[in-house]
Length: 209
Figure (spheres, rainbow, N blue to C red):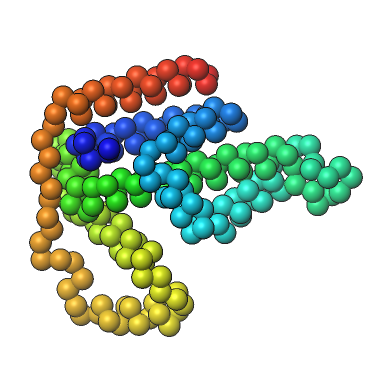
């Protein structure tokens, strides 16, 4: 479904989606996530992200629970986390989780060439200020590509593994000789997607205020 649109249009819609998530709390946040889960592959990506980020998510919830003041979960216990802290940490963890899962969906849909093409279109206006958008886009895509390899290979991370990787890469050409940049023409439906996403974002911001 996402590949029907220009990758730049999908990235803009994704950015609007993330902004909308950041302003939502309680049941509107859960409703927004439920709507997002209707996308093909969203549930699988979310479950994968839960497993890979489980320690970070648990730490975020627990730290918020103990450091945010409020009504304790277990009255009379000085070490009890607060309900307000757990709710705040849970909301932040859910936003982070959906953000990671949704960007992975885009990466899987368009691949590194399409993702790079979308980034290049979005960052192209910054070239007027002299910013090296080509280098920035390429480095970001290569970083995501390396992260994807780590997810698939699942190496046993350790200091010895890291030292071996650094030694193997020392003195070698780590960047590719050429990078494929996908060609996508901007269609009317891409403009419609951006307009609809922007309109939905404005409505959401008005409702949650």
